[in-house]
Amino acid sequence: MLPGPVFTFEMIITSRRGRFYATRAMYAVVLLLILWTVHSAWSSAEGGIIPAEMMPWFGLSAFGSVAVGQEILVLVLTPALVAGAIADEKRRKTLHYLLASQLTGPEIVLGKLMVRMLYLVVVLGVSVPVLSLLVLIGGVDPILVVLGVGATLSTAWFLATLSIWVSTIARHPREALFAAYGLETLWLLLPWVLRNVSWTGNLAFDSAIVGLADWIGASSPVETIRELMFGGFLPGSDRLAPMYGMIGIQAALGAGLAGLAAVQLRPIFRRQDDAIRRPRGLRAWLSKRRAGKHPPIGDHPMLWKELQTSRPGGLARAVGWLLTVFLGGLLLYNGVWMFLSAFVEMWEHGYTPAMGSAFIRVQTGSLHRFLFLSFLGGVIPVIYFLGTLIVAGSAAASITSEHEDDTWVSLTATDLTSREIVLAKLLGAMRRGARLGSMIVLLLVGGLVTGAIHWASLPAIVVAVAVYAWFAAALGVWVSMFHRSTWLAQFLTIGLLLLINVSGQGILNVLSKYGFASMDMPGFTPYEVAKLVMEPNYFRRFQSIQWPPFWRLWDVDDGPAWLAIFSVLSLVIYAGLAAGLTWHAVRRFEVVAGRAFRSDRARELEARALPVSPGSLTSATRLADEEE
Image: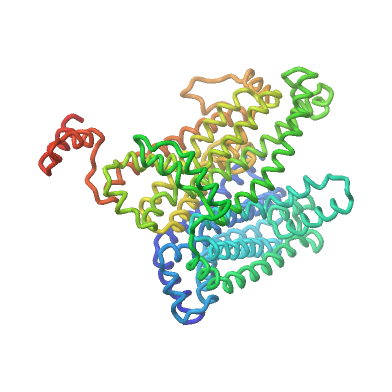
């Protein structure tokens, strides 16, 4: 069974799952939606029909949109697909049997890795015919198509090997997922962080920092796309050199990580299996202090358990500290500096800045507040995006972890209702992103104090973040209810989250009169949050708009008005989806748990029924149903 029994077994069970067929079909729909959006924007800009001389530029624009969409798909889905491959075997106590057999570490690790890479290749292969047909339009060199596909595959390979290496170290699938996404975030943002701290004045230190940033950035698709955008996205030996370098570096690093994971599998598992997981020294002292600070359980034991005891640990906590040190330190440095500059400018020139170009802002004394506004508009969506991944991953592991920890039977045997359990899981997942949410609120308050943003930005962004986080948590809990594997539930949750963002918001973009051009990018919810970071004079734009009656609101012919309409529609749609998923999860939990559905009124009557007997319980349930 070449290349090994693990590969053969994983191939058989993977090829028979209907969800993978659905994923490929939906990815094809998303590609068509991207092309439709780009075409509608170009046709509306050219008066309905794209001239022949503009077709090469249209082809290049469509190619760039599809290529960027592929990279986003790889960056978001690859860790969710691969990070739980080995950790899930540990959690289900099946890795013991694999290691007790004659299978070697490379056979186990590479077998699971290659099956998941093959699945990614099949999904990404859906876009190859689309990219090839764009060559016939003109403007797209075949070399660009080959390099675009190669860059996507090399990025997927590097992230897959990074995730499988993390999975061999982590003890739990959710810990592996958080660590994989955290390391990916550091990989993508660390070059920008290092370039922003290389202002010490020490030439040797600054040169070393910039060199390190360039070396890490050479493997990053974000830095490569930035260089291509500044250098011109056209074929040529010099201009495409960054893409050649990125593919080579990612392939080499991926091979090294795959080999490292294969070699470390047995030693790490043996060390984890033999270790006594009892905190000592400083960890024991901190654990006692945390245990002493826990509030009393009260009348909501499930909510107390989710809020007080479910904390990440091990590798996930270490990666979280790295993110806090690097990204949090940079955010603190730049945020405080820009806040102080904007505050001094506000103190000297008044609270409300003027609108217009950069020259006008310099003349009117509002340049630093405009820079602070731009800083908030770029940082807040990134913080929100990271928080959403944390919330979705935690929610997806909320119920599957009960199966993996062998606590599902004891949980469903209690007198807790489905509403208490599901809502506790939901609130516990949303609590995971509370610190990042507090950071967003703190930044917004700084913008309000300095006059850099409009006062309506604070409630608008708080409502938007709460609605989108509620949807991510509700989707994760709902998916987790129907699966027993944490990594599978996390993969499906994040995949559905990405699909709903692209397809749902993309459809709204297509319905717009201004098409893709007015929305600047597909409507991911981070962009919806970025639109709500409004200028102090934002509502001046709406003073000249002739608003029609509500039933003719679609006839508004103004770009800012359309942005406002779509923002409201986005919040309403996502709130409706979140409420529907929450309601269905509460109603379906009793069926999944194998219990008869009991309302809160029936539960209260059951508690009052003394002595408790099958007849009294039946009467209590029947009485509660009659009252409802």
